[in-house]
Length: 124
Image (tube, rainbow, N blue to C red; front, side):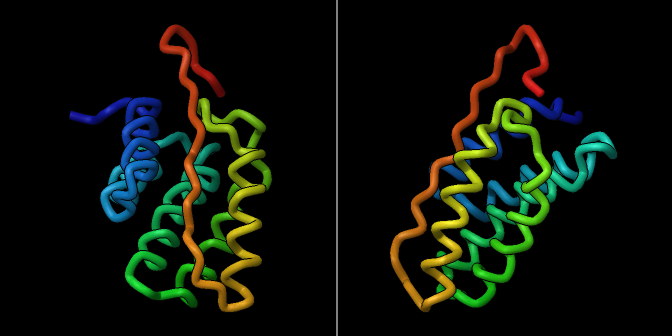
């Protein structure tokens, strides 16, 4: 049975915010695969964020930086509110992390994806 896109995104974001980056990647990848064609690039950006954080959690700073840059490129055309995700603040946080990683910083990658869903209407 296929989860609806909003529910899949909500679960993926929950897992991401709980630090379960690999599992978040799996759920978000399912959303990307089954999502509407018009949203594929933006959904891929969300998958890439989870992948970047997973790389960082395993000590792969170079991989994290590479995928983080791709994620930002995929999300930069997203509306301010994409399925309830506050994209503007997310991109700002990711940009700061990119700068940290680019200079070899190994600081904490602590980003929370802010998501608000109105169950009565599509938040896109």
